[in-house]
Length: 582
Picture 1 (cartoon, rainbow, N blue to C red):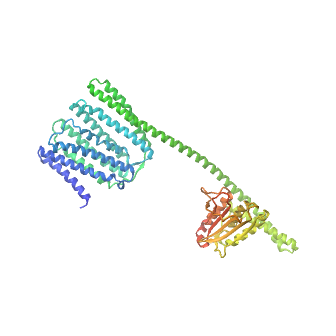
Picture 2 (tube, helix red, strand yellow; picture 1 turned 135 degrees about the horizontal axis):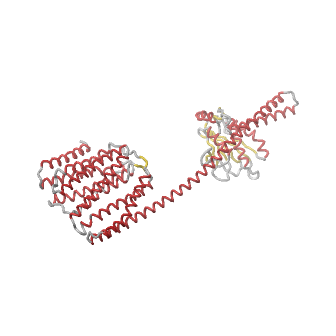
Picture 3 (cartoon, rainbow, N blue to C red; picture 1 turned 90 degrees about the vertical axis):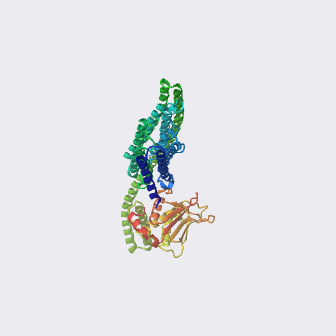
């Protein structure tokens, strides 16, 4: 038999035993002992049922765990009160004294339960808001304890008066139960899902306990109550129902929560402030009430002043937390404002770049038309029977026109006006072409180039026009940083590393070791290049499935392009063809 079945059998057996004892046993010592033991065992079983929920693996969140810890604390107080009651009636075989010092334990057993409801485990809120809310609720609980000390304790310790004590205690305890029932009713109405079912179970058990306790007090007042009487039957059933709630909670989904509402926090704050303002009025009322003894009056004044000091310290701490929160939110708002201004600048810059791209695309189309005509005429001149010198000049004109058309094609690519056309490209041949086109510009600045091309490099899948533009631009970037007195050549090296083809652009100075390119350049993000042309190169390489890197060390000029070989880059072809290179 499982523990769950044993638990339910124990609840049913103890409840049935109480019903049988109350209905069939005569009034006397045996009935009293049996009833007290049954209720004590029921409370022991109930407390044992609550305790496992205080562990971390049983609860979905910290709020839920705190809820069950406080509920378990209330059950422990209740069990302790029953143990004190059993001490007198079972062990000592005497009546419980009146007034009974243990009544404060009975009153206190509802305080942790009310605090558990104040945790609001069915709501999810910010941790900072929860600290302030819990502090507000602690103020309310402190005020509630003060009310008990103010109303009940003086007639129990300072000036013993059984009638006044019982009247004040019953009123305070009844009010406490009404507060618990009201809170449970509100939570059962506002909660959703499994939490609503759990709150309804607590509400039913608490309502049955409150009503049975009320009728038991009524019977005590009419001298008809005794331990084990029929008035204990609903009380026993309420204890058994309370013990069954942790077992029933396994059937509910307690992981579902909804966001906390600010109105709830404002309401608790206002109640806590109102509770603090009542303390001076309580002291003033005690001072002006001439119907009570002087010792009780002095006790109440001292209690009011002590509660004022304690709750005042809590309010001071709460204001300190609020000040910290205000500073946090002010800093957060300043950061958000700065980020908003930065985002606005970036948006304006993006709009400018978009307009520039449209302008470049339009201009490139306009330039492309006369270039086509010029190329056609140069081809006609080259095919005609001209003298050799003029024939060479016509070929040079055609070569320069083709170079200009290549630049125009790069501008169209930059402006996203031309779709990428991927094909199998030999990187070595592409670099040789790029260097032939770039040679006049480099020679004009006294820069020599040296190619170290890896043998038998595999092809890459790329748009040859776009990749040519990237290689020419990166080589030009390195060449623009040269100093003829310290740098001897522009070195371009190709090699294969695993499944990638590597193209390196670096200085060929004898004194310089091969630089380590470890900074990844991306078209977007924190490592975005500062120049528009490098950003275009980064995007082209990214859309070809590769990477563009440069050294993170300042003052070192080099670039490293990594491109996947054709068999690995086939997957990027649809993306490149759909979006273009940049």
